[in-house]
Length: 143
Image (cartoon, rainbow, N blue to C red):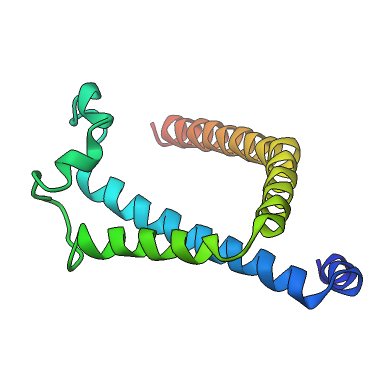
C-alpha cells in the first residue's frame, strides 16, 4: 500500500491529488447525510413500497421512534446542499478522476473482495458444522 501510494504521489501533482481528495471527501459526507435521512425515515418491510419514492415528502410527516439526531431533517439536508455546492467548485477533471478511481475500486472489490467474503463464509459454515458435530459427540459420550 505504501509503495502504490508513493507511486501515485510521485507521478501526480499536488493539485490533482488535492482535488481528488476533496471530491471524495465531500461525496462521502454527502452520502452520510443522505444515509442519515434514509435510516431515520425509512424502515424496511414497514414503509410501503409506494412511499419509498416519496421519502422526501415524508421527511416532514413521520416522527422517528427508534433514535434521534438534533435538527433532522434540516441539518443533514443543509449538509447535502453545502457539499453539492462545494463539489461544484472543483471542476470537471476532479469528477472524471473520481469516476475512474471509483470504477477501479469497484472492479477490485468485485474481483477480490466478493471472493474473499464468499470464502470466509464457507470457512465459517465448515467451522459451525464441525462445532455441532463435536457437541453431538460430546453428548453421546456423556450418555
